Image (cartoon, rainbow, N blue to C red; front, side, top):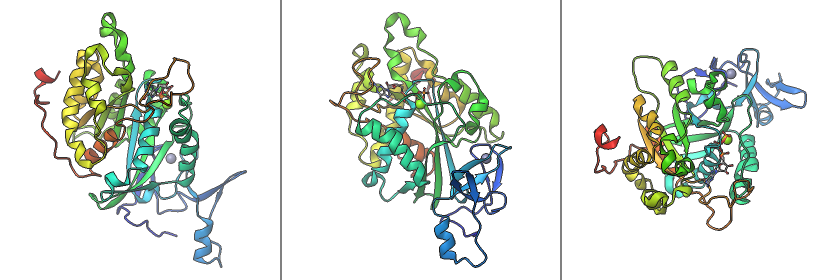
Length: 375
Ligand SMILES: Nc1nc2c(ncn2[C@@H]2O[C@H](COP(=O)(O)OP(=O)(O)OP(=O)(O)O)[C@@H](O)[C@H]2O)c(=O)[nH]1
Ligand SMILES: [Mg+2]
Ligand SMILES: [Zn+2]
């Protein structure tokens, strides 16, 4: 059973996104195919007289086992046959990472008309999809419940997609890591190994923290980005300089509507700019607008990822579209509920990572190359 996956890349070694060991995906002795059973993973091998059809049937829903360094873990069966795009979500506790990712995935999987010919998207692992929908998408987007904080544990894909890109002509395994923000606050690198292999980053900052009023402007909290920037810088092979492409998302932007009579966010949130790929043409203008907005509201340090030499765009987004009535509420109000502009950051990231065609951007009036005017 060494049959390649259609659209696979021509290479044999893949980096395990969980333990960072190099794996030869074609070596079923090294990375066995397993099925989970109540007594643990059972290794699957073809029986001596077994028909190929029967064996294939038996392997439906199977996973691959990475032995790690004595801590075995399971990976989606096709992962190593595709070109990986490992995406890390970065940001402090309660920044809004999990709600944002949930809304992003749900929007992406429903956005056929928008990305139709450019990307073909499906889940990489059916059971992972079922879990994600049962535990996140349905409670949040159907029942409008507030999701709990992410629990600590071995960092594994929160979700993974199989993305066929017209632009690259290949199939990509796109995996998202969403860990508790406390890891980024404590600089605990052992809890974020995936950032050492990340191909793209979604930095999430809590927009509602800008609402603190004049006296506190200088004390807008640290968004927890430094940990990730340091880790990326120290683990990249030196030489080509730049860090992977990234987006900075100002989450919970619904709470910034009309902040201090500043109409910037209101204007962007009002736009219906997620119905066509051409809408991405305004991303650079939004980046400059949002960068200047953050500076005006004391959050210039949220722009640190831009200093790292990677391509970065900045976005206003809201996963729920509305605020909870009270801090301790367990549900969002139904009135006005709905994700706003959550897909743009992801599509911008896909474009920077090469999965979508490069966007012919509208040029902002203020040049990003002119630090005096931007910062
Ligand atoms: N107004 C508003 N509130 C939001 C939005 N998204 C999340 N929240 C609130 O912010 C809280 C934290 O959101 P999470 O998505 O759990 O944050 P997180 O970054 O995943 O947090 P950790 O898992 O602890 O790192 C939620 O409990 C919601 O109350 C949004 O789009 N708008
Ligand atoms: Mg979370
Ligand atoms: Zn591993």
